[in-house]
Image (cartoon, rainbow, N blue to C red):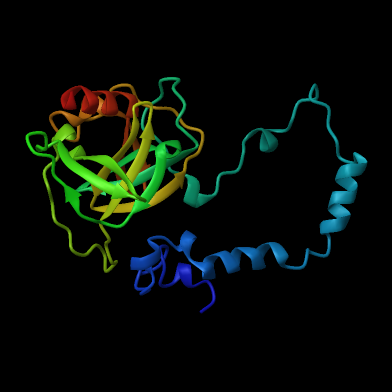
Length: 243
């Protein structure tokens, strides 16, 4: 099936039987093959001519010359016109990782994302495991601490078995912070979202009685409100409670 990732994959109805094994279309050989075909396709008729003019310096414009109004405003694709509410001078990362806990959509800096894993056994630690520290989980042969963001953000569990007819897969998210690797379960993960150049809000609306302390901005994404979290405060709070 041509462009199957847009039909039955992560960007479609997610009915592909391979999704449970590969987690995301990016890990599928069919998706990789599609990418190679994209780069191997024949160039457009005017491609060589356009680059010849560009390398020859035709159409070059001095930086001192003012650009037209049309050139000054970069074009943003409709699917990339997701913005954060407010303006404070703090830049939004170019990429964020979006996931769902209960009924809330949250996001962290994509640079923190180390791995996405399928659910597996979480081994409790006697006299240590609690509502925050769930236990230890084996990720590629390494035992990593598994924590509950629900306990920190005080989010209530909300079981959603079906969302708009799409299959939903719980996952374990492995992130790497200044304090090492952490693992936390999520009810659903969207993946990496590219943001446009927008500003953050210093005083965002609270999504729960405690979570506002860790939220840096509210991002409008696919008609949803996504809470972009302050990872430094979040993981410092987790480490402080576990010590």
